[in-house]
Length: 113
Image 1: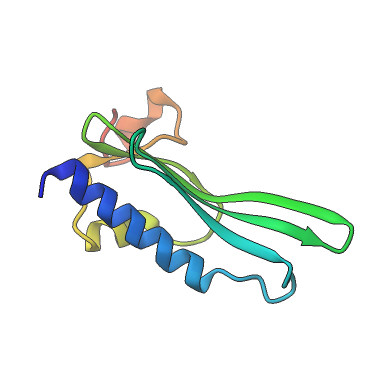
Image 2 (image 1 turned 135 degrees about the vertical axis):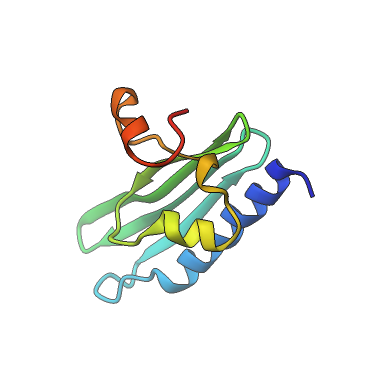
């Protein structure tokens, strides 16, 4: 399996697990959705629905695959996602913390781009 397909599979599996365990007990009408675009290599999990009169649309995670690397764009949890991804087979040098400013990425210990 080539690296892109491997990373697509890992991200799909990771987000499927998130969707199964990520229900909001105090908001039963809010669903966890997973959006995957394999052609553009975009992967996202989000909360979507209604809590009383309030509409909820909240990204949980967002990843892109660019130039053979996983760009970790959004993490609205306390999870150590990079550790989980590396345990699933993603190489440390293939993770870019896209939510960090470009000038600081080289300090993260992960890929700068």
